[in-house]
Length: 470
Ligand code: FAD
Ligand code: SF4
Image (cartoon, rainbow, N blue to C red; front, side, top):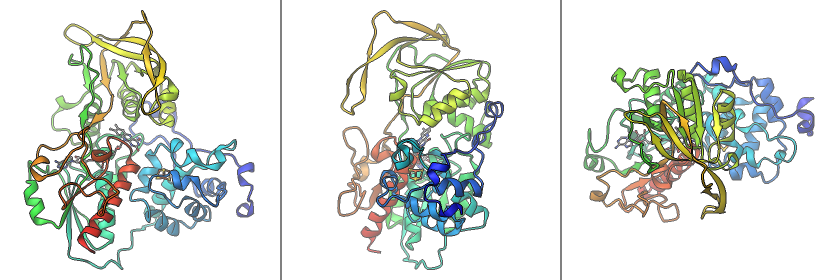
């Protein structure tokens, strides 16, 4: 009866999965959402109107066949749904967890006009998690080996997206990463309360079963020369991310107690995963008044990690207003629920303290004319200086490209903001200025999203297949 109701969206409202209790969330590094049950998936997925020309598919960066797998999931047909979702996405269980759906698929759902979008992300996650629990594995039985081998540098979402397409087309990918586990920022960046690390460990096993080879704890340029890789492989894909921290350029940034966001997050992951080399590497916020500077996903992750480590107070200062924050709205809500205090329209001008940080001097801003991206520029209000007391400051202003010193020697050119030049619109998609080398993800587009990195890795792999003539 449920399945025959075309007006399900009127009778059944949008329902997100339940969250764990606040007391658990404030202490534990575990995902905060309880998994959906099949009955909830049936109810929620069946709300989809199956619009003839679905905006959600168009807005999803990998162009998932969303209404089709929502229908299959609503019928409990998980194995068909998971096959379909893997036709467009390499890591659907990850995207379902970490995509900012409010500005991608769900943001463009027709039901947003008054009824509440379909819970697309959570159904995507459910399909993959359930299929894995049922023992599903990608079917590689029809793949014909080509004998070609491609090196992939970086086991982040871009590198994994490329590996997925290559191995399904009979090309053996060998993935090098300097970290001891795959995932890039999915493992050594995004905290467990958004994405538990077992998800990537499981994915590594799935990839290995498909024929992808990983050479972890291997830094290219240090543990193995790029020339050796060029000599040994038929082509190379670079998916090395962006890792140069943006600085505020104000006094006091080098004081003890001031940390770059990613250093803090990585030290926390290393401790939780047992990868910590020395106890001194751990950056603890226990018992501290923490000020986080920034308004993106990285800032939200710092806020919420500080809460879980036992900070006495966590304040997040951002120079624009809430509507102009770049981070996912869902994560801002989660941070607020966990006790983070937000100060909007505050711009830091100095970090103060004698031999260690004691506070952050901020000025109030109001929004002026739009900049070249259409976001209104913050302007300082005269005489508005105030000091936010702090024992620790986490700087989360974003990242700039971090090109390897050896790129030049191999003819891999950079653009004027130091991103690798590897456009999509050329004979071989995402080829760099060295014909044998392709690139994608954050190192080409600047720091962006997991799903855009996956898409670019997959597209670059198509470019590589064309280049290899397979
Ligand atoms: P990365 O994920 O950075 O992977 C690059 C890999 O290359 C790394 O594993 C690195 O070790 C390896 N590497 C680099 N140089 C070498 C070398 N010389 N030799 C060997 N290996 C090398 N996006 C979302 O969509 N949702 C979120 O909620 C979200 N939260 C985020 C939170 C934080 C804290 C951060 C920092 C980012 C977040 N992002 C989020 C952005 C997202 O993680 C990135 O856009 C995405 O991971 C980029 O993928 P990538 O494959 O290009 O690079
Ligand atoms: Fe939405 Fe991201 Fe899944 Fe696309 S990949 S359907 S944007 S959650």
